[in-house]
Image (cartoon, rainbow, N blue to C red; front, side, top):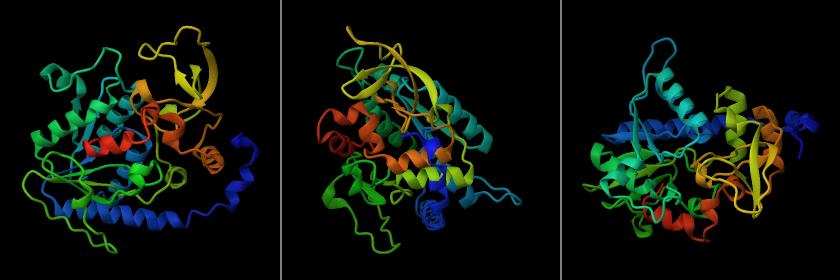
Length: 314
């Protein structure tokens, strides 16, 4: 669908609900700051974490009186991230004067806690090991993430305050009921919570908010020309980490990324949308979720995300 042909749809699209979503997110971010001793905000430099960071800025930073976000930002780096995203991550953290902590999967590999089956294996699934090591290192008791319920079925049933045991794992019988805006944040030693302030947002809400608030994003979220190969219905970017296979035809297409992760498992979609408003129109017409359309790691099995959740991935 060409977003440029239907700009009139934007005039009929309401942004009124964004205030309620923003208010809920700010409430949750403040609740985390009040209820936990050592929280952190997971910050990848992607669109969802940048929206959360914008809400955190509104929650804690006053333009006249100043202030700062009261918890550090944490990034688990696979070493295979898009440079545009990591550069923007560093720029945004520096702009806010935030404390950015980066821990690398490569360091876990050097320690022997992560072992790849072969050199070309995706490191994405191994982020959970490095994340749990960072939790142990800094004694974090709450990690704020940008997961949304509309992304994937394993995330659809997730609580806003998701309890994790002393091994960092998700146990269904340990999840607490969430009535209205009341959250049970009590923990035993070694346990922690994953908190998802934008759980109730959709991909469309995120892009409407980006458009309304002029949230700056890495350039790869917008249309650009890129070498890709068509592999089982996905446009796989041609890079040193993801070279074409024998018999595959390299094409240069106009693409953008709906979601951004490890280079080895993230694919763009064909698009000419160059602004948030044009992406809003494309999102209205989308029939497949952003992870379903772009993530190779979610297609390994029907339960791939469920398994990673139990292992402490998000």
